[in-house]
Structure formats: structure tokens, C-alpha cells
Length: 192
Image (cartoon, rainbow, N blue to C red; front, top):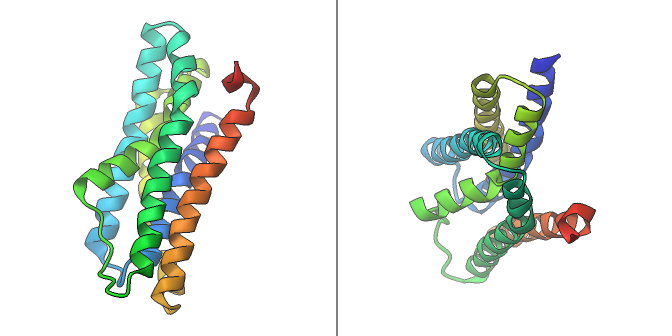
């Protein structure tokens, strides 16, 4: 039963990264394997790393850290997704649009933003007494695979006009940030 629990947790934690990769694929002029690999590697790495951090911080400190992280994580994700989504929309409306590519800094920010909730995943792994390295490795591998799938699935829609794709992709990121913010604000634990 442990492996099924880890698999489900991995898929849930990878959903945000999947949507980001899908949005990025929509605004890319062409789907390039190296861009997909970079995005998948960074997102998979941070989804591997953050549960480890959450696990060991929770194990070595009090529950206060987990509460503090839960009180700010949604704001960080909201700001990053809103700024990136706004940039994508702005660039798509620009008549002299160039191919949208992610800098190393933007890749790292996306990796962190999509994996902040994985800190809580590390706490869950600790609480369920699941094997930490196997769990985090599975989370990272599944995230890598789902990010690649999301990036390549966007190719299906790439025949639509670039402006529509840019507005849709940017809006998807902004809506994802708003969803995460509202979800955490409505959570009774975050309000306290």
C-alpha cells in the first residue's frame, strides 16, 4: 500500500508543474526537446528536493516551521505565477513577438513555485513513516514525466494563432496562482 500512496502523492504534487509546462508549450513557437528536458529536469529536481527539506525540517524542528511555510507559500506562488502569466500575455499581444524562452532564473523560480507545496508532502511522508528517499525519488521522476507530457501535449494546440495561445497560456498561469491563493486563504488552518 505504501507505493500506491507515494504514487498518488507524486501525481498530486506534479499537477501544478504539469500545467506550467503545458502553458509554456503553448507560448513556444516550436516544441524543442532541450527546452522540455530543461523544464522537466528543473521541476523534477525541485519536486524531489522540497519533500526532503520538509521531511528533515519537520523531523528536526517543531511544527511551527510547517505552519509558517503554509502561511506564506501561497502568496509566493501567486506572485510568481501572476507575474509570469502577465509577461506571457503582454508578450503575446506584442506585434513583434519573439519565441518565449525561460532564462535560468525563471526556470529556478518556476521550479521553486511549483514545489513549495511539496514541503508539506515531506511532512506527510514523515507522518506516514514512508521511506523518504524512495518517496522523493518517485515524486521527482513522476514530475519529470508529467512535465514532459504537459509540454508535448501543448503541441496539439500549437496550430491556433499565437496571440490566442499566449493569452490562454498566460491566463492559465494567473488562474492557477489565484486558485492556489484562494484555496489556502479559505483553508481554516491558513486563516489562523
